[in-house]
Image (tube, rainbow, N blue to C red; front, side, top):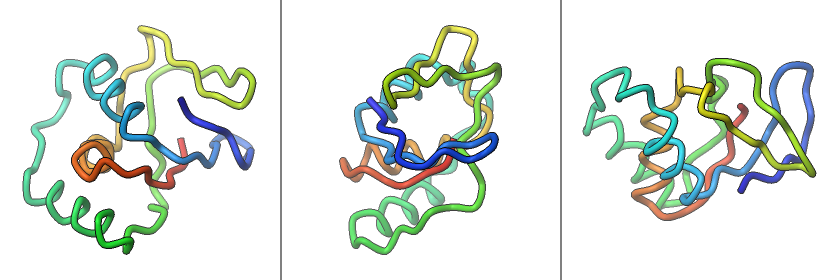
Length: 102
């Protein structure tokens, strides 16, 4: 789902696919830990659609340790989204991959 293209000490830079974004939002979103802000999603979606989205300095983060296998991030049921829901939703709505650190 996600291809690792740069390892850092505690984060990995990846391209988030719309499929992965949908998977995380549906299966790893801790019962929508925060209310989604439609205006924020709309702004990010517009930037993605217009090729103006840039890598956020804030990583998309999860509870628990993630596993990287064959260059792909593997999430377990213990990995719940902590930060990044608006970026993931925008990726899904734009139906385009976005760069991110996780």
